[in-house]
Image (cartoon, rainbow, N blue to C red; front, top):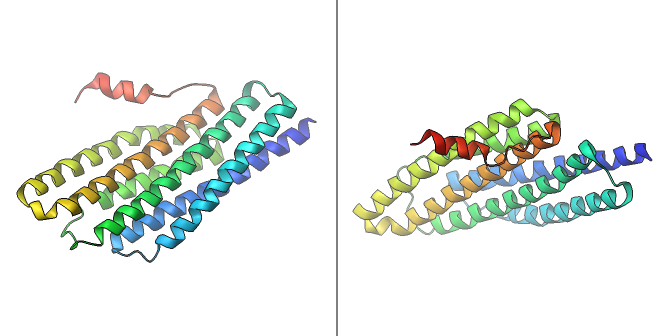
Length: 226
């Protein structure tokens, strides 16, 4: 019975790893299309969306089955809860990739910006957070998960910088408003991916150590002030 339960957990983990790879690919492709000003890769992202939605459902069903048949406690229970929560986060990462594609399509209707503000740099940071959160899950690496949490402020700062820079552009050059709004939305999409990566990292810490760190890094930042 115990061996069967361990196999169920391993199957969930394997599906999560695959789901993470798909979500990471969706983000990479959507950002590539943004930076290269092309919609040629959008169809690939949209096709992956269906796959990631199906994986989300499959993982939830596996977890429900394991909970019903095994009645796990302590670490085993945390692992299963982590699996279903991470699956939800990855599904939302996929949604953000689709949103980036949609906002890129809007951008393509307008002349290209001379400089994409800090979006390329923000995209690099966010992709790194997503990749490291998934590595932390695979390796059960609390230190790497904590690194992801520590990087979240950097992603937030990028979003604020991009917003204020584009706001200034809109005020001085009204014709750029539609393009600027699309870029602001892209920065929001990237911020949300960073949030989902942070949530995955928090789940890893909880599953491994039983320590709930949700919101704690936000409280720390607020206490430090601007």
